[in-house]
Every structure is written in C-alpha cells, then in structure tokens.
Length: 204
Figure 1: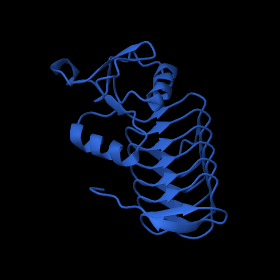
Figure 2: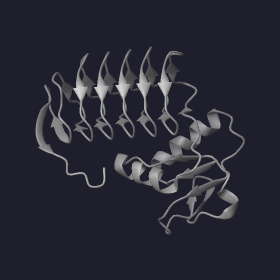
Figure 3: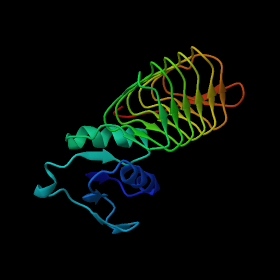
Figure 4: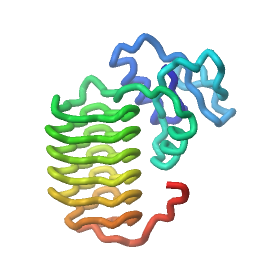
C-alpha cells in the first residue's frame, strides 16, 4: 500500500492500516523533500514504476488538497480504512479512500462518499448523507437525516441537529451548534451557528 502524505494525519492512518492487518506499508510519498522519515518508515518523493500496481490512500487533512491529489494521481484507491475500535452499521455505504478513525460511530442507512475523514470519536447518526471529500472532526455529532455537501469541514465537537442540509465547501467552527440549513461556501461559528463570511474556493 502507498500512503500519500507524511503529516500527523498519516501517523493515525498508519495505525489504522496496522489494525486492519494489511500485509505492509510499501511506500509513503510526500512532495516536501525535507521530510525523509515518518515514524519508522522512509518517505519518498516521486512515483516510480514499481508503485504502479499498488493501492493507495491519501493522508492529507485539507479537503481541497485531498480532492486535487485524488484527481491528479488517478490510481487504484483502497476500500475504506476503518480503525478496529470504530462502530459501523452493516447498512452503511462508505466510499473508497475514506478513513474512519478510532471510536467513530456510523449508524444505519448512512452514506459516506469517497476520500472523506470521519475523525476520532465522531458520531454519524442514521440516514445521514455525506458527499465526497468531507472531514468530520473529532467528537463532532451529525444527527439523523443530515446532508453534508462536498468538501465541507465540520469542526471538532460541533453538533448538527436532525434534518439539516449543509452546502458544499462549508466550514463549521469547533463547538458550533447548527440549527438551520447552511448555504454553499459559508463559514459558520457559534451557538447557535451563524454565518460570518464565505469561503473562496478555487478549482473546487
């Protein structure tokens, strides 16, 4: 397996890969040539012919960068990586390249897109639909029948009440409580959550 990215996020992904009993981590790749080692693994900086048939996961926390890299490398991505402590209903759909962190909970009939991050201790309740490249941060709670658009970031310990629709490329601040639908590109903070500005996303 190839890991793209050598940040702190990649360290947790390494733990997940080990917990899933994959045969090996074959390569870690990062564009930053000042990074040569991550934990006990060597970091390389270029794709080579021997990597062509390897499955891959993107270990990049930034949602837009993760999308750009996924579209650029166009290779065989792994199925969802799920930490052994996560609790996931059998009635969920989870896209390729998505990473489910320790102690996350995903309940029945939820659908999660490709290359998402469902972070440590977050809760995804029943019938939630999460589009591609979304990051649900640690201890966030997404209650039933919520929809979250592509590329949105749900901050740590944020709460979204049932039935809410979150647009694409939205940023919800840590600890915010979302009680109304949120438009595309909005930045939302506070309790209850209020829109304070709008993101400018290029090439989204």
